[in-house]
Length: 198
Image 1 (spheres, rainbow, N blue to C red):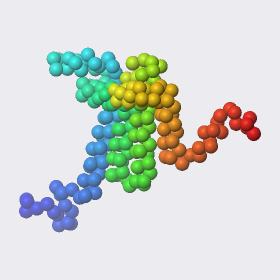
Image 2 (cartoon, rainbow, N blue to C red):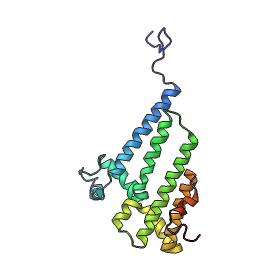
Image 3 (cartoon, rainbow, N blue to C red):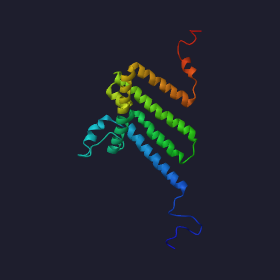
Image 4 (cartoon, rainbow, N blue to C red):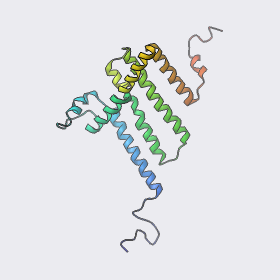
């Protein structure tokens, strides 16, 4: 009797249905994405000395998630794409929510592609600005990260500063046009010379 997992009503215990497993996985993903989001937005360069001395003794950090959050933020902000790395927890949260409530997968894929592409392009854009010395190193940490600075530096060497900046602007406009099905002529309609050439 004690080894049974069912009552007379037929209700099961100590067993998880596929639906419950899926929702638990979604809950875990959403929780992790929130913690990752909080660690990134509370990134501070002032935590660098604490990270270097973390093995010696526990020191207070500016990060909301303590020393663990400081390490995570340092990776995503400094080593990856700056604050644009925030798209990672946002996307994780969105896909985790799908496990609770079905959403249109096609739209989610569009949003995913848009956010990832935008993060890459914008980080490279600011990396190029840093390479041509239009922004400081501190600003580049926040908006480019090491990957963005590396890509921006390579672009600067390959096609020059003006060429690289122009290409990244065009790429960003292209991504927006494709994702949101915008009309290209709307961008030109914003130019002040409209109508002067008629």
